[in-house]
Length: 76
Image: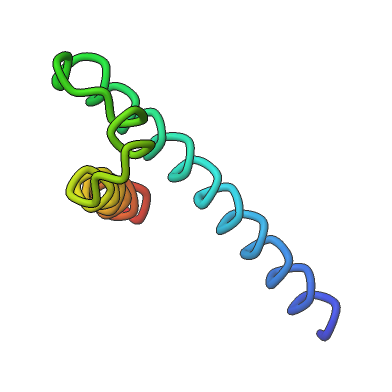
């Protein structure tokens, strides 16, 4: 009985790790897509180097928004 619980827990951990990696890839990809396609006149990386805090808050909110969408999508 203990072996079954251990393997079920390990399997669940593996699936959650896979979901986390997929969410990270989709989140960063979404940020890059928004940066390249929608915000052509604003370079997020250059503005961050200048110390523009508004751009850093904007980029983090985009990542949070994409993460919420991906997490709801993966949960079904």
